[in-house]
Amino acid sequence: MESFNQLKFNLQNIINEFSGKVGIIVRVDGEEIFSKNESKIFQSASLIKLFILEALLEKISQGELSYSDKKSVDSMDKVPGFGVLKVLDDNLNVTIKDLATLMITLSDNTATNMLIDILGIDYIQSFIEKNNYHETQLQRKMYDSEARERGLDNFTSARDTLKVLENLYCDETALFILKNQLCNSKIPLYFFRKVEVAHKTGDLTNIEHDAGRIFFKNSFVDLIILAEGENKEAVLLNNRLGECIYENFKSC
Image (cartoon, rainbow, N blue to C red; front, side, top):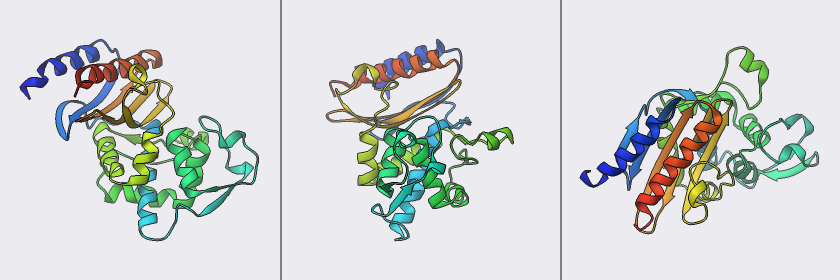
């Protein structure tokens, strides 16, 4: 742990300059070296999609669903926000794997809602609870303004996010999807394409999250950042923390 003292000092200095709230965990080859507010509950934004993906994997492992199962994208399925399905032709046939890939790599809200419908929101929340994700809740679908007006939202913590990612990394397909993330303006911004990163972002008004694993030559670092504050400042926080990790381990 002594060798990480300067890194921890640098990480803390970056966080000290952020005016908002942050939950963070840094683990090097499975050893936690830095954390702050790891169990603090934040609006999850699109990080909730990680838990939907793991619940989907359970259904597939039980033989109740298959990645090759086909679904038709109806106009009623389409919702605003991130994604491409909303602008493609109606009645497009996609596989379950297509939906999972779009949900993660492009944070596609339509794909996400279709998977929530396929799995059932109660099933997903039950999965979350039985797997001891203590700070995580799925209370509404993406862009469900009526549910939000009733006070329903989705929540998670840095601790739960790290745990779900660790589980997903054990699945070859999930890891491949996470490594093909197309939203790369936060943690990997300053080292994009220099090393592999398997991660997922999330953002709302005053929410900017990014969480994943950075793969160096002989080491890997798990970096979980949940940030609540002015969006531009929170994105910069993600950028600087990611750069700090990269500069410290790029020769490893």
